[in-house]
Length: 512
Image (cartoon, rainbow, N blue to C red):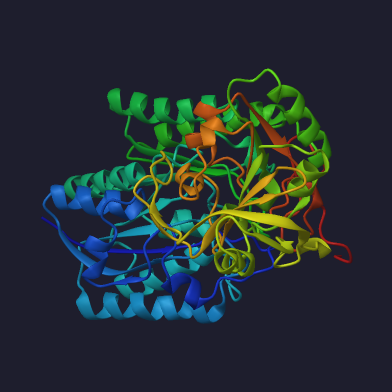
């Protein structure tokens, strides 16, 4: 039995988004737990599809003594404020110093955190932890699929274990894999070699989906390399590939991979094979995107003969990647083309949601909805909105991604534009539209809707692809800019291609 400290600090940072991640964002619950300190961490994560839940359960099953420090996560947004970062570090540092010594540490990290005062949020965190516990203590961290896996992260952690699915249906399972690896390292006490590689092009999130090619085959190879090498006793213990998070403007943004094992030659060979496989598929990381009007018209045409919903993915206003979840480009197009019966969700406008509650079910309110933040100069859409249903925003997720999540997202409402017949699901807090319960909570059965607009990039596919006739990707204004060519980078390393087969970034305007 080992004495293992467990902790987590999660944030996916879109440095181009308009809203920062404050300490209050880390403190409160949304779909995931609120800030958890000390012993409350163990029970507080139970039942959630998050890495630390899987790790805690598995480490307990293995008989280890867990020392919970603290865990917090905030919704994707722009830079984590220095205040928030340092407050969390104060909690972690206090636990490390007061409750040690430890035999090992497990960390639930994201891998794409950028704070106001550091480009590499996780690398800096690991550096500080190493300064306290020393260079030899085993530290295993789980990472999000969209981690920008930096060289410091690879060097400072003993091992990093990433998700293998997007939509992320294996988050808790990744925590379990990380726990098993940590247990193996503690039992065997053998030196571990690390092979780290970066890829020289950025991959837009919408084409990173593991349900479709080419990511599906690449992650099949990840599993094969790990399982195959283990079965032949060639010394590979873990293989992780992270396709990256392009909206993080940092030098080491982009796809990377890391292979761990006891045989240096085998580890290096596996890393070379995987990076070559990713590069060979570069041209395949592309697909069709439609402007809002073209998407609305095509959806209307397809819906005539469809037996299931036509799903419109409003990918650039995905709150799971830093979008405001309130832009109205797709909504306006659906209304213009009178897409009767269409439903779009969720538009986060707390003022409109509360106004709907005050107006009451069955009554009509004339007011603007959406564009609460005003991204790209957008204005709310003013119409006669009939309030169909109101709700408190407290419910549980049931889909593969959000299953077990306990939503607490404030007042919600279903409102319908009297003129076009288009309906909107209003919410008060930013949550990606990736679970059917978000619609059922306000009386909509998603499988019965002719056209369904979703503020999501890929995670929606886990719960909605099975009920969809087809999925159209929509390029409507939003803070999650899908094509990296359009992002105003300042810190990206020179020489990386901005999208597959795309232009090479040579530095910001005015750079020497």
